[in-house]
Image 1 (tube, rainbow, N blue to C red):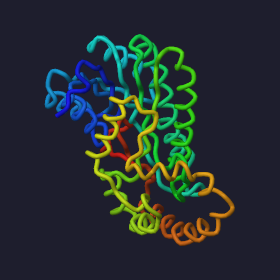
Image 2 (cartoon, rainbow, N blue to C red):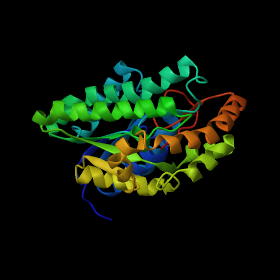
Image 3 (spheres, helix red, strand yellow):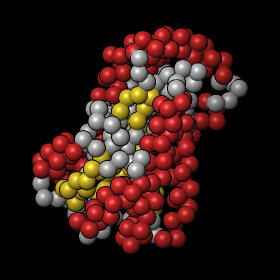
Length: 298
């Protein structure tokens, strides 16, 4: 195992499960000190104990700026600074715009966008001192709309622009900023969605590559940790997601609309029925603000 993070001090939000947990494990194996930030204190405590003296943890909700700032400052105190950050906390909600209630939409934006803003804001003084690097976990849906995931896609597209703007603002401080764009990752969320929403699997199968494949959480974590080591500005999981970024203008152009319209016409009615029958819209991802299980989305 490489030790290329030896002595580096990393904060991971949304660290109790999924990609956040895998990133923490791999980073410690490669020499880092890590502070786990999230909810589910029992899981965080057990994970920190399992990882050994190089790990510590703090319970914090990314929707609560006061608590999050305290957790970040305490992490810096325990580790002697912060060199690296993975802003990984988020949620996903299913349902079309006409179907989704306001509270659900606002909650997704508050966690996925405002939570990233709060994380970036409060780690900045520490990253300035270390001339550090931060990776914001966005999504392949940052640049590719998908029916019935409007709130999630909007939040991740906004998080991308937030991170790119922040990159400009902190460049003179010596801080570097990157974005992670995962497609579907093999976590509780994807598996649970396929059980709860049978049409979801059919929708994924009809997407062009790489939208129709699932990547392991281990592979996603390895790409993120490599991105930290190399201070990458973009991390795509799988790498073929880069094509969607390059082609986003074409994907959203009038030329592509006939295909997109046919695709949505097949998928939306059944997805709406299944979401309505399910009786809930939200699925949780790492570091969210409830006590339900945490997972990771595309």
